[in-house]
Image (cartoon, rainbow, N blue to C red; front, side, top):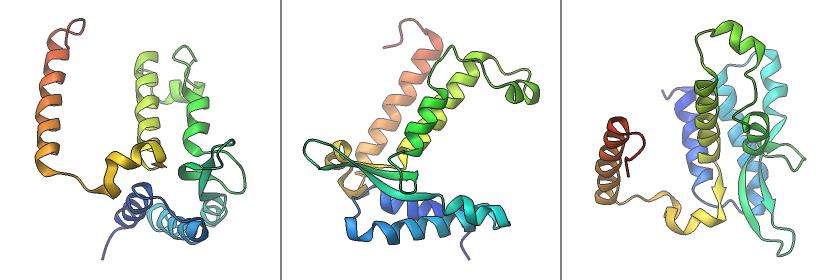
Length: 167
């Protein structure tokens, strides 16, 4: 039996790598809600929480073309990624008091770095028209993947050795 996390990741992967037809958005939303329930457990508040989100789309106003699809507040033009960005983008914003109380050793720069990585995770589970050409519906060339992995591990090593002149 698959875990709730596996099921949620399966659905997020499925929908984030290929544009969902407008007619299938409601079903995609229901499917992802089920994934969240299976992953996050089902206390009473979870049902209302998952029913507040949807797999929705952002439309470019002039052309009326779909430019992205992802997790959004249901029936509103608010993506979770954009909401999170607005909550955390400013590197000078003081970390919330509760965060400081729970993690007093966490520096401001570490808090900012962590929230930026969280934003990357959120944006990675969205479909985007500007990435769709290179994402090829989720297909990855194994040799290309290995080349990226090797190259960027070397770049990380260079960065750690000389953070000012690593490229």
